[in-house]
Image (cartoon, rainbow, N blue to C red; front, side):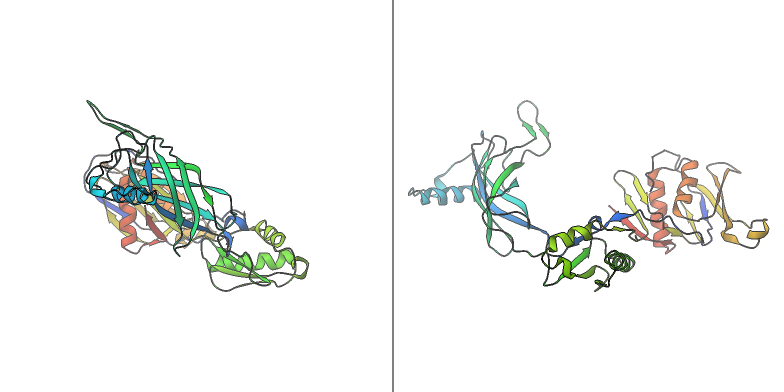
Length: 371
């Protein structure tokens, strides 16, 4: 992988010629990792909760008169205490209507506490100093799994006066351990006598390697792949009453996963990350003040005679008649191209534009992901 640095160059349009032969050398292999780093057990997952609540105790920074949600919520709350007040008669600046969200895992139990995030849904200027009143948190099925309440922690600054100042987001706050779990999430880490492992990055090659790794470790045919993302493992007799121990052993098995060829681009920061398996076919591109000629050359050594894949001759230049020459032998990959562009002072934005054009031309073999 490589992260590019930015350089500035004059903006003139000349020809960028890339002529690459298909490389024959094998790509760098992925590292050996644990199964738990590339797969999860089916049934062991996170769930999202949400609820509508009220934050009180604000110092005049709550919802304005144009926000009716908090007024109606306060009127409803007062009615529960036997006080009937019309929402039209209320004028509240110390109260804000908020949305409360949380993530609950299948491992938590009744009585455990989880963090919650509180976000303003009205026009409150700041939630600093506020206190969240008891708010039920429900899942997508409508059932309540936790109840949140507590003092808000902002981590932001909102100042008003002669000048306005804002840091971070004062309308979003957290309550560490602010919700108490009232109902557990139904889950099961095994289905009868089988365990399902789900790959985080579905891939047929990785699934096949995982099956082979498991069967070799247990010296019997316990695993088989349902598809590119799911591997079924039969629980052997010695683990019939110890599925947790079986899962723990599976998670610690070493495996070398296969990865797709990818180029990841972040145009905002000018960052390009290139996978080792990415390749480029023969293509010609013209962009700004860049002059790069990539020619396959024929090695004069007998063992490489007549083999265009023996090396690539990068001729690069910027506003020069001859330009400098960079010689790269072996693989003809994107990193070779990037090195040549860096050598003549190409900016990260130039390289991003070139890679996008090459992908659009169908000459970049790999996924191009733009963040």
